[in-house]
Length: 219
Image 1 (cartoon, rainbow, N blue to C red):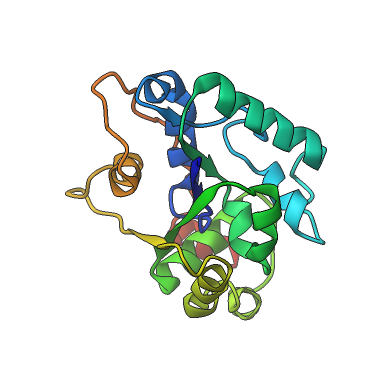
Image 2 (tube, rainbow, N blue to C red; image 1 turned 30 degrees about the vertical axis):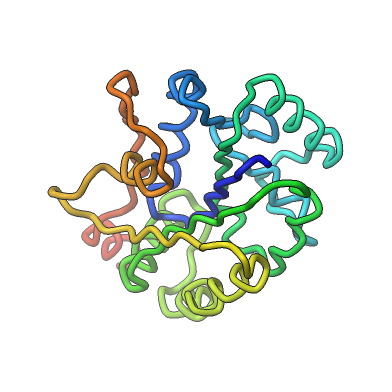
């Protein structure tokens, strides 16, 4: 039975860094029996999965055929012979009914992996990022009100626990620290994947406005 480690974010917890690291080191990981599939991928992440299980697909995600995508994934697993699979998309963090995943991944053992960040730090980082890329221009207090559901970690975790009651849900705390192990290596270490000296470090960093820029923006 394939064991799927499904990394669902949340956004602004170095998801892009982790995804880039997994994509860059795909061949090295294959040699150890870990597959980061090319199937169902959009660039470096498996964002199209979100469109299969949500009534409101996100506008920036490529639409793929659900059944063809499943067949491509199963074919890739057979060809590589890997039993440990990693798929990642922070878009799945907002999925209201993760139980829908069970049909697509029938025959898989699924371990959800959720990165969580202190709510105040997450809110500030997400707000800055969306201001920077033009996704929002609303007042910060209005933004906070709209984000309350995403910041209710108990409810989010309960949804996934209810969907997979027999599985352990892995929570990976996101903390910025010079002493901390790089997040991409901590991710692999947490799920039990070997970290090889052949792996290439990720250079991607998704910078947001700093506080001075944020103050200037609203001045």
